[in-house]
Image (tube, rainbow, N blue to C red; front, side, top):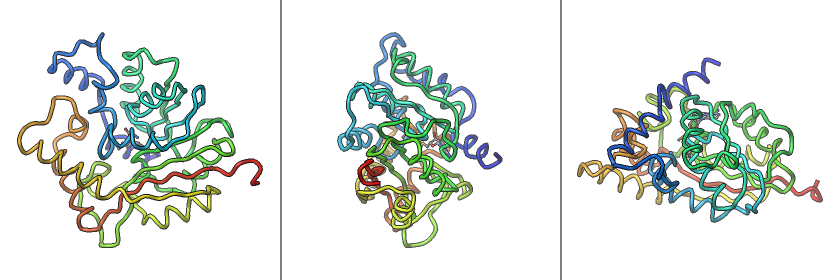
Length: 280
Ligand SMILES: C[S@@+](CC[C@H](N)C(=O)[O-])C[C@H]1O[C@@H](n2cnc3c(N)ncnc32)[C@H](O)[C@@H]1O
């Protein structure tokens, strides 16, 4: 519980929705007319933001009417995008209550409550029935997960047979400890990075198959460098993930880039699936 609170407190405290509304106000955006694309700079809270979600979605075999779970959904930008793109339902779960509250208000703003719901919870103890979902994804969450075997076995449990599981994260690189602060930790506390091959082995041990692991380091590095260049030129827009990362946003971004460059982190995207019923 102590660890859970520390992680949630790290990600957000207070009224995140008010922060977003204030930034939209600076952009003279009326709340009645806000679109999913308007919110994308802030509500896809991971390396390369909306572009990375779109590229991940290109690879996911989601059909209209299916029910997908987003584990560690944050503000729910990816959940709303996937729900709209595939005409499916998405249930989101996140450990950080201020994100859950803001996420549900953003969903209401876009009038998508019948497709997307977000609740507070821990991905290591999913509050869902067995075989409830047609697919699951978790973007940039596992860096904070202390019990990966449990996290993966919970994802496996709630999936139907044949369903996909997708994951993006910063894995541990071969060249020493990462520099902090980083978006997921100020000083290395509540950070549980793991080398990609160990992640793959744990996914296999949980029962997943057809594991495709991709190195996303070069793409992330380019994304971080572009964000840093904008920040240095004072060109960051009012609405962006810097609003969520607080005072040390630039330093976190600089360290995220430096860690990849120095081989201290090893970012990956993984797509795998629970075996089909006929393979059991
Ligand atoms: C970098 S943000 C990513 C949010 C979202 N996946 C996205 O891509 O926009 C990391 C998120 O993981 C959540 N998180 C961390 N540990 C978690 C856990 N054990 N269970 C559920 N959510 C968790 C944090 O609260 C935070 O919202």
